[in-house]
Length: 408
Ligand code: 3PG
Image 1: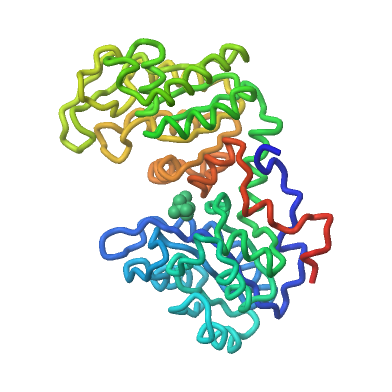
Image 2: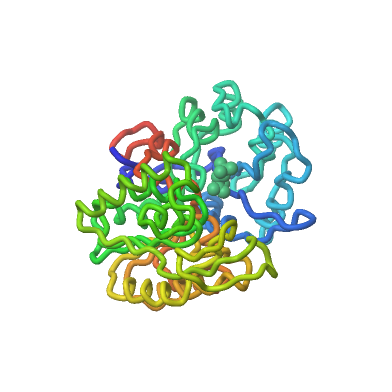
């Protein structure tokens, strides 16, 4: 089956959690600013319905997450304590913050917990066993709980111990955020309302091609922006330096998806003008040119005004729009016009609008438009995997709705 198209899985509502030690895997991989400040706590807010539900059900709630990529080593800048503090503020209740992830100290602390208490374990990725999906680490983690609730959609594409390995030791069910994500995203691959437009931007063309390989048969039109447009423009012959500027493998994949689009009658819109800059930096000199006139060594920093007008016209009649990847270097104000205008166009649409991918979600949130969209996914890589039709390993291992594995 390409990806998890429907939630035939048990959720936290299907099991008895009262008095149980419930390990809740969340994705609290929040962006950290200077001095370790939390720059965006959306991912913490997104998991509070599950945590609050468990507290009200009088479970003992043990939260675990990764933060950053410490690759199996303790990194003082990536401790969970500030995240636990922010969670306590959001929940308006005390949260126990533990400085270890597994072991006797953790087990003793958990034994002292009362029903309805909340604790946060130390960063899972301080242990090499997490990313290695090591069964010894998974078993150690499982020792502190009776049941696992996976609310970490954003990391459900990773075969890690707390996501996959732990299912060998404890029943795993979906949290409320996981359920919401799957419910919102599944219709894109199952029964989208047409016309359906896919808006793809960002820098990495390879990721967008993987999405197209899976989604071309489902969509009516594709709009490509950002740096990802470059190999597509090379394919059409309107990029200076042409094919020579790109990895032949990418170009071959572009050729294949463009041919697939032709076969399925899918319209692929590419930029007719772009904002090009000397460097992807604030203050860099820039100008609007047609793609064929991009000076050597310059970058595509945004889509141009003619492209923007064409893209907005293409989006307007759509009943479904899925958007991944900003139209330019959104974080630099001079290059944010395309992304801002696409976000505003989607916000005003009477259609199903699904936003996913770290920087796209961040842009929509910063613009104050997240509430205007049907769904803003908490997934970055997980959203890409889902749209690319790859199975989400963390969803696959959840207890089936028809089975009895997780009851009790
Ligand atoms: C994310 O931010 O996309 C998730 O937290 C997964 O993080 P990772 O890419 O480091 O596994």
